[in-house]
Length: 307
Ligand SMILES: Cc1cc2nc3c(=O)[nH]c(=O)nc-3n(C[C@H](O)[C@H](O)[C@H](O)COP(=O)(O)OP(=O)(O)OC[C@H]3O[C@@H](n4cnc5c(N)ncnc54)[C@H](O)[C@@H]3O)c2cc1C
Image 1 (spheres, helix red, strand yellow):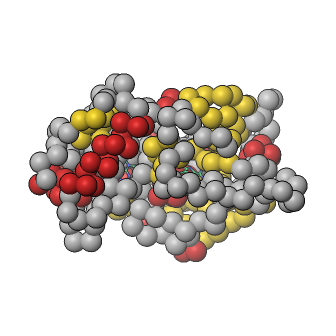
Image 2: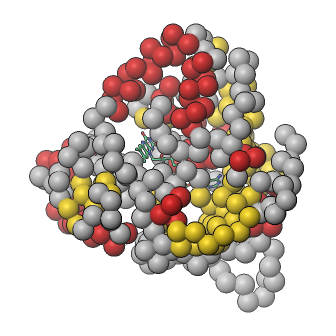
């Protein structure tokens, strides 16, 4: 895989409301570094950072985050390398929905289970996104990571993929992923997708970040929340969806504080302990920052585990 070419002004740096980069549409500002080449990613990861993909599994606090937020740009979002042969390296910013459509058109099987997931390929790998019909790990062969300023290839078998999780080394940025899909026909792929689509039909269309809680062993978080009578529970602009109790929807003006309070109310009401599925930034109990690889080692701030 050749490194992506450096574009002028690469990386592009801007202060942005992270609400604009997440599907839930809440969250304060950060300095966003949009990278169009591996060299830019290397530069961007020299100081403490976070990586954003499609922002579809993220709850960002109203105060934003102080670290830079690394984002892969258009150079990493081209799905055309996937052809009828089915074995391709793809950039980590390729949007999953377009990739699923392309695979169907080419008659390639292996991505049906991730139909309807609004992730980027890199974020899907990190979360091992999927459904009971299949997950991204089923098609994943290997990844290219930026780690401590170096590009490394890691086989999928070494990524510790499990139920909505991976065990990527801390500070790794997924640059590319190699998928291997199986030749089939567009009709057969569409047929397999129909079952996934049917299962999704009950999900809300409003702004959300997908399921808020992981399913506890042997049960479904949505069933438990529904049984507790919490559908429609509202805090400010955040509400437990009527269509599916494990979805929190933003009615338009929700803040992260509304969402956090709503999640707390759910957890206080449901008898079974529920673990939040979303990654949280700038909030208590949230995801640690990745440590930059290069700056002066003396006095460097250690990775923080908020809360
Ligand atoms: C309507 C809706 C439906 C959904 N349905 C499903 C579903 O059926 N199944 C499912 O599994 N999920 C589902 N999700 C949740 C979400 O789409 C997945 O968790 C997805 O994997 C998140 O990918 P992302 O690119 O949006 O990552 P983000 O939300 O941007 O980030 C998630 C994590 O991945 C890290 N990350 C992102 N990109 C990279 C990268 N290139 N390198 C290193 N780290 C990276 C981030 O730092 C963060 O820790 C749904 C979400 C929505 C909004």
